[in-house]
Length: 544
View 1 (cartoon, rainbow, N blue to C red):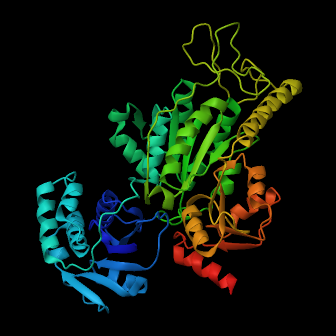
View 2: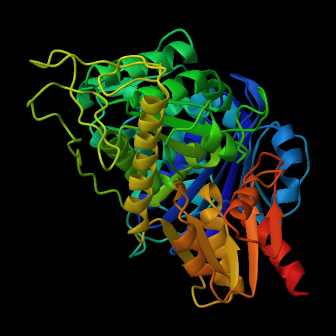
View 3: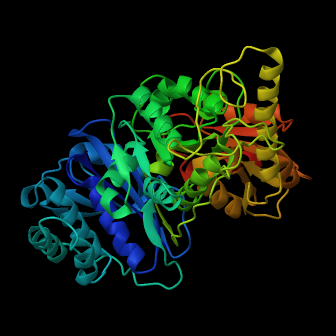
């Protein structure tokens, strides 16, 4: 059994909150839920909507068509008529004039509930329609401010609505309901985060907000400096002093950080940068999604230096890969980029989250002899220590340097230090080469037809693959790129279709660099995610 619900209205009317409240109820009674929030960059006004898709089987992607549509204004009706099925049930505010066909339930949403409290009204109306007991709704409302007022509104609309079908409690899909942003934040904390330093930029801001709200609980520092240049320099300063430091930003902010990214490469200072992609270039489309920062993340900065780039595709992967990113940065003393996108960051997933603190100790100086910050080693990794360590002078420099960290322009010393950093790159490559988890496989795993993708498209590729007989394959690490592991999964494939959100085909360009040539491509770049219907229609067209 699968259903989908759209809630539409203006910013400030509790549209997102309504979607999340409904989702929490559905998760609590056993359903897998995927919640997608669509909103313009306006504090009030405009058109917002939340799409809640739920099933007794796992779902990880948004769909266009809805079984239920809640429209708080005429604009929402006009915008979502195309998303209705013949059987769609409409919940309309009493003052909506726009006509729709099918079952219509009119309720005084705007008259009886103010602003964000309309979320409680919507929840009440929908739970009655689903014949879900009132108590299930009250259990998620209890954590809201002004509970009594919200309870009163919820009960009024529950009693005023109509029963449509029975959504019963199911067994099996029991999980946690959390967003990619929450996964990033919790993963960082469980990877040993000491300080998060960031300037707000959609869609990375929710991580800053979440960590700031819970900083005492997590025992961390959270700082918002004046701009992204200040941010990344503070991150490196904190890391130099011995703190596990991280920042988060989007494309424009990351652009401002690139000079200091190179400083991290030269000084071998560990740090983690969360890069949440949005519609680009320039200011672009701030509240929508894209995958056009891939090559930027791989090649940003001047000069050659090793880095690691991880690419989560859902909330659980955000948690696991960010936790690992903290450890990788300090293990190899390199910048690590967690490359996500709006649709991963701000969508909510139903997945089991078993938190565990995993903090691996880096290669530390043993205190013997004279401390050499940039000691030339076989694996390219020098021992770390931090200012204040007895017997150690700890240097960090933007200049090329010798083992002590003293500036040098001597050709032999320059080559020796560059070779050291390149040996580190090779050490990192070998570390990942031995692992199987660098690539994920889903869909119809026995098929000779392959959907090759990355990041946020993973869920929709798996679902479409299962339905139409395609194997879904994605790399979880973009640098070092798991080319050998990927080629093993593509061996014998008769068809390889690259799926991405980039007009220039950045992922396909990356594949070409490693000798992987697709036979087809699906590119979407309207800054909206790939809805399941989009990919099914494209693949079905190819089959004809």
